[in-house]
Image (cartoon, rainbow, N blue to C red; front, side):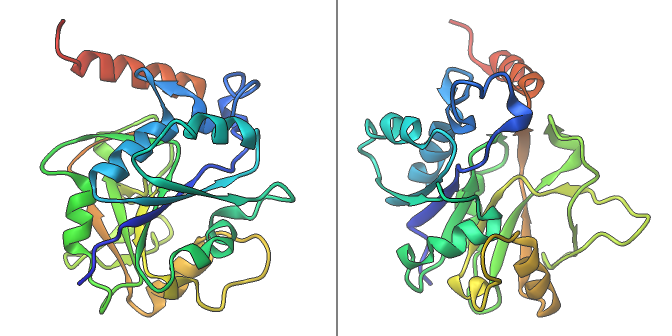
Length: 241
C-alpha cells in the first residue's frame, strides 16, 4: 500500500480576516513563532516523506514564489488561480494532473499544531487504506484547539467513519485542514469553483470518508489575535535558552 509522497498546499486565499497583517503579504507568509505559515506546512510534509508539492496561488502570488524559491528539500509546482479563486474543491481539481492516480496530502496553509502522541502525518499514512477510503481527514478535538471559534465539523464513530453533525448537536471535533485523498474523490466534479464539502458529502453517502484524531494541540491561525495567541503558546513551550 503506497504512502503519499505528494501534497497540495492551499495558499490562494485572500486572507481578509488576517488584515492588517495581509495588507502587504499573502496569508501563507504571515510569521508565527519565527517561521512563515507555509514553511510550517512544508517542513511537516517533508518530514513525513513528501517530495513533491503543488501550491495554488492568487493573492500576491509572486511573493510566495520568491519566498519558496529558496527551498531545495521538495520539488514545488504552482497552480495559477490569478483569473479567479476556485475554492477548496475547485482549486484541487484544477491541479489534479500533478497527482496521477496516487493518493496525496492536502494541507491548508493556516494550520499548525503541537504534536502529542506520535506524529500526525505519519499516523495518517499508517491509517490510510485506499480500498475503503476516498478521504482521511485529521480531526482535532475541540477541547485541545486554540484560535478556533466554530462548533465543530463532523461526527466520528469508533471505526473512524465521518458524518455530518445532526441539527441541535455540537461536534467534539473540528477539521484543521489536513487530509489524505485519493484522486477518485474528485471524479466528476462540479465545474468552476466549488467547496470540497460537495465531495465529502458524496463520500459520506458511500461510507468512504474517514477521520483520525489529532493527538496534540491544534492552533488555527486565522486572525491577528490568533497569531498573537499562537506566538504566546508556542513561546511557552520553547526550551529555555
